[in-house]
Each structure stands twice: as structure tokens, then as C-alpha cells.
Image (cartoon, rainbow, N blue to C red):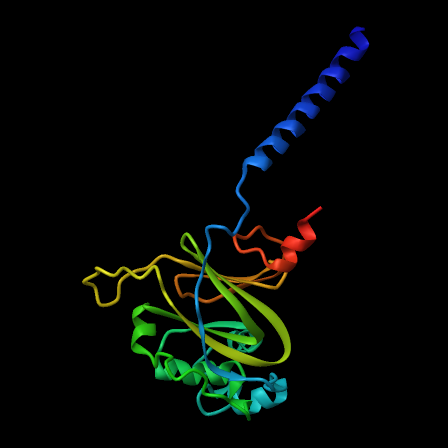
Length: 227
């Protein structure tokens, strides 16, 4: 009996742990119930835009009059920025020019002005409105859970969108002209996989096709999870 006492004890412990985990799981509320859907506007878009070739980008931008082949900008950073799919816009005119040049949007031929009620800059610059460019992706839904905005997107073979939505975390009673607001924006695909995230309007850090637990599961993800 002594030879079997330790293995049997380990089996009982494992069974108990599995049962406890299952019991906890049944009491947990389904993810996404507390997330709030946020309406968004498409302010600028194209259905046919594609990234120009590196040769065209090099001639027009990297070695063009604004950047002088890296004389005034880090050329390696310009080249990395060219392939970013997700970009925050903060409302500046000069920023708009750099965004268009650095990401290859200058080659757009069928640009659409989009929703006329989009903010032109001041509210975006102050943080009352969040504006994001989605390159080769289309926005499907924006949701807010705690201090995190989840933007669900679908990859597209061509095109881009600039979307805007009200920052519900902006303090209504603030006396500051440009208050500090802590929030996160996470881009996820149609299966809930994280593509990129940014903190408080900063640059997006793209994370690839990493599987993550989000508070905004898509209908497709829910269906595949059901027994």
C-alpha cells in the first residue's frame, strides 16, 4: 500500500484541482456583457488604395524634399513606419501631411471625404475625440470596457479608413485645456486576436496574430467556443 499512496494522492489532488477550476468557470459571467458599443464615423477612406512600391515611396518621400534621405529624419524609422497598419491622428495639419507621406497614402486616387460631422482637429487634439487610421483594414465595431477601447477590424486586400469616435473617458468637469487621460486602444481581428495596441493616443505597437482574451468576443469567436 505504501508504494501506491503517493501516486494515488497526486491523482486525487489533480482531480480536485480540475473540479475546482470547472466550478469557478461556471460562476464567471460571459466576457463582453459589460462592454459598451461605441458609434464611430468614417471620416476619410478609399476602397482601392494599396501601398506604393518601395521604389515609389523612396523617390516621392524618403528622398523627397521633406525628408532628404534621412538628413532630417531617421531613414530606418521612415522605412518601418511605411508598413504600419494602424495610426493615431491627433488633429494637426503638419501631422496629417506626415501621416499621408510616411504611410504611402499620398498615392490615393479615389479618396472619399466620409462623414461631414467628423471633427477637423480641435476636439481630437484635446482628447475629446479619438481618431485612428486603419490601413488595409475595415472597422466593424468599437467597444469600451473599463478604460480600454476595442476596435474590431477585418483585413482587406486594398483600401484604408480614418475613423473617429467620442472618447467617453474624457473628464466632463475638467478645467484643464488638455487633460491627461489614461486609456488603451486595442485592435483585434474578427476572431478576437490582438493585432496592435496603443496607450493614451501613443503609437500602436503591432503584436501580430497573437491569441488573447478580450472583453469583446466576436459572434464568430463565440460560435466556435460553444460545445
